[in-house]
Length: 177
Image 1 (cartoon, rainbow, N blue to C red):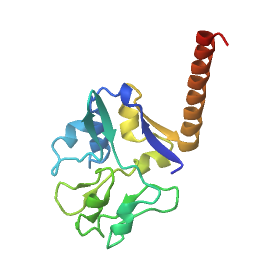
Image 2: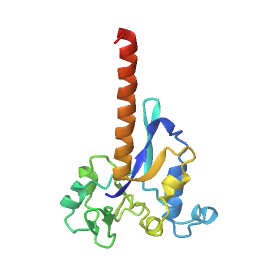
Image 3: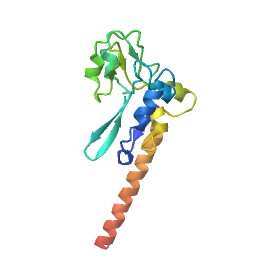
Image 4: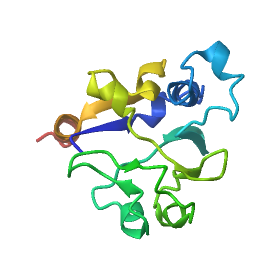
């Protein structure tokens, strides 16, 4: 994927704003006061999970070699190209649940009506017009970010280099070298 959602777990407050924003953007009305009355209720495509003292927003990682696509007998799960998100064609989904069992992150769910699967689509309608996915835009602490993958990796390398430099400097002072 060219762009992806990354999470700085230490910043997540487990407020679940991302879950609400996700359900809202995938609702029929797109208006909170109306969405709560919809039937079936709007469904979120990510879940905030507890992990020790931290909370981790979990959503589809749009794997490069997506096992969910490979096991889908009807090709309901697909992508438009190598850097595109994994999407679902609900009309083709037969609800076999193979993708649920295959997903290494356990982030694919069944729709409320039980007829198909539901998963993160990276808010494709929003990202096509230059907006962030709803979950990212709703995060009050900036724990979730929608970034260019190469830029995120470059930043990680810079952070690691700074840390290594600081450690080396500290050891030089300690040992007098």
